[in-house]
Amino acid sequence: MSDLVLELTAPNGLKYSQPIGLFINNEFVKSTSGEKFATVDPATETDITNVYAASADDVDIAVKAARKALKSEPYKSLGGPGRARLLLKIADLIEQNAHTLATIECWDNGKPYLHALYADVPMVVNTLRYFAGWADKLQGDMIETTPTKLIYTIREPVGVCGQIIPWNYPILMVVWKIAPMLACGNTTVLKPAEQTPLSALFLAMLFKEAGVPPGVINILNGVGRVTGAAIASHLDIDKVAFTGSTQTGREIMKLASINLKNISLETGGKSPSLVFDDADLANAVKWTHQGIMFNAGQTCTANSRILVQEGVYEKFVEQFKEHVKNVSKIGDPFESTTYQGPQVTQAQFDRVMGYIESGKSEGATLAMGGVPHKNVNGKGFYIAPTIFTDVKDHYKIYREEVFGPFCVISSFVTEEEAITRANDTTYGLGASIFTENMKRGHRVARAIESGTVWINSSIDSDFRVPFGGVKQSGIGRELGEAGLAAYTSIKSVHVNLAD
Ligand code: NAI
Ligand code: MG
Image (cartoon, rainbow, N blue to C red; front, side, top):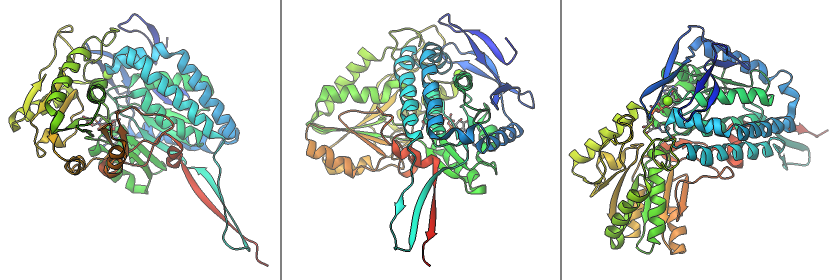
């Protein structure tokens, strides 16, 4: 193997080829400075390997490649059907490499192998095939005005995109961004998160194998304030798409203002779950547990604020705790019985532990957990599922995104109070409602300020359905037909037919 593609053996015994270079023009290359950084296995706290880190100069090289590819053959003449074939081919290759991709996700991120294999990988494949379907259906409109005018619109690619990816669902977030980007005929310089750089580089090999022309997809690892900032502020990038924290989203918006980039942002959340007296309680418990504890609580739509109507509050808290005990099995993420792996990094572990201290000192009741979990092998960034009750609305743990296996539960009296308190947040990504009264379900769904509302479930998403936030949870939508808007620009053509 070359020094840019290593032969690695994962903890589950899988031997596979892991690229570590920057992926520019369909080749793996070293960074111009030669600089690298290490990525850590959060289950053992050991380094997996080092990957090359892109500087602003490297970003510039990748942007030139992406700009050239945009208007050159073979990409220029592929057309919608050609791009659809690429997306379908990528989906097939990912399916064939599902075991390897799930292994990398598990190793680098700490998420359970079986979750990666049966949740992340299928969602990735479905998203690619869905957007393949759109690639040859990007049509404009003919707009009636006056008899002496023919006016029509053309949907064009936005151009060169900069795409910045988080670490919680690495391959899924790469594909949510590259599938519509490619379907609509753009090119990209994409930066994975520095906590989980490996799976995107493996995907890069598959993109090349699928026949994606050089320069169309460039993948550059690196830290946010260097590589990410160079992308967000680059004068020859037309659009920036980002998923991550609201704070970084704000920073990216500022940087992107330098050339008024088109932007789409999917940022944080503090999503409420409202459990009404008339809910199917077992169903509410099952979904709110999944909604906050899945992926070790590292999901942007996690229902981290659970508001329960007073008549069922005590019962809900008891059943929720019991369900956590039965289902949230913490352990080695490669073990098939594991539900919860470690937090992704020491920094995230520390951050969640900080919120646990904050909850205790503010006066909330620690009803469960609140401690590191060291029973796996004495190592790893594991945190016991944590529940705080008696939480007041002004507490930090009620207001801020924690991003861990950590929820707050509070009681309410009336529907009106539930809505007011659900909306009392700067975020607006998701909300769930549990009630057997469908009139109430639909009424409350309309009243909630949020990009997504679930009635009687939580946090599941579907490639056909628009996803995104209101307020400080984001700008624009991904997935569904609405996801095309982020990657196309509409040109209006006026034809004067007057003599
Ligand atoms: P982050 O938002 O800083 O990182 C996300 C991505 O942005 C990474 O690729 C990072 O390298 C990049 N980035 C960071 N600073 C940048 C800059 N100045 N310019 C351009 N790109 C930049 O998130 P971080 O620090 O990893 O996690 C902190 C918190 O963010 C988490 O505890 C969680 O609350 C939230 N978060 C939310 C996610 C979501 O899905 N909404 C995903 C990841 C984190
Ligand atoms: Mg890692």
